[in-house]
Figure 1: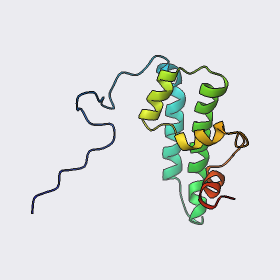
Figure 2: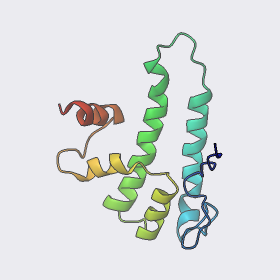
Figure 3: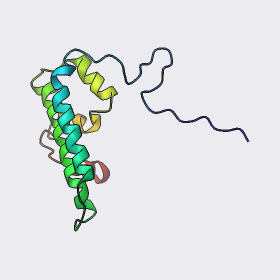
Figure 4: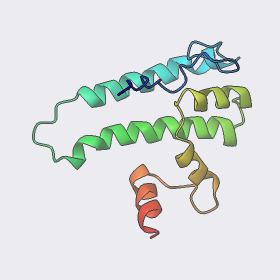
Length: 128
């Protein structure tokens, strides 16, 4: 039986026409890099936080909150304040920094104030 080819991680292919994750950062990335690093550090701290005495679902609350804050910050910069370039936004999408499904919900009328990814997920799964 032949061996299966190893799976490649998303964004790491170097085939013609594709870029690696070390591609050039677009203009304006340096302006937001510090804030993105703060979100990244906060997520890391939330993952490594003590889970003693917490219920299983309570452990994910800080992670979901930081995830929501980061995406809301990017959404407001790109769609509301229009201080982020389209090139930079597409770069963040390509690098999996942005939750496009959550931002797509915020763009729809009536969903502007969806405050929790769990509420969005509940609506998506059960249609309530």
